[in-house]
Image 1 (cartoon, rainbow, N blue to C red):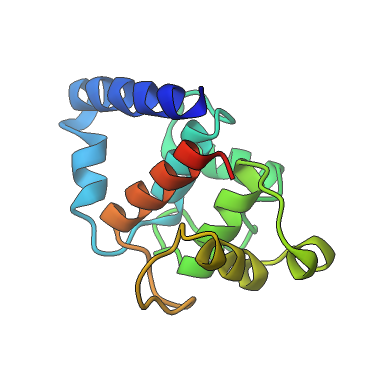
Image 2 (cartoon, rainbow, N blue to C red; image 1 turned 60 degrees about the horizontal axis):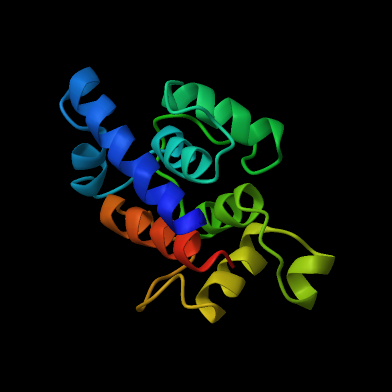
Length: 146
């Protein structure tokens, strides 16, 4: 159910984004360092926490409101892998292991998503997230529902 919905959302977002600014998803997939606002939009729309008609800046505000993003995250600043992992964990309401349950933080969110296979490859938690990796990670979470 969630997989079908996310695929539909991404398709609708691609169509509406193409009409708005010549391809939001194309722009994201070609980005070497995803901005905090674009990351929030991708995750919050995928998790059904924000309407796709909202702006990326509004999605970041929504992420802050639900505790998925910190107030120090600036819209155009690149997002780190550990903070992106935390945003995914919070937005999709994923359960974590004992350390994440006791200390919900970007550090343990990163470790959880590595152990679940959402984050693949040799990636440092402090690395910026590139757009294609962000799309793959969001898709994996939406598919598995973990």
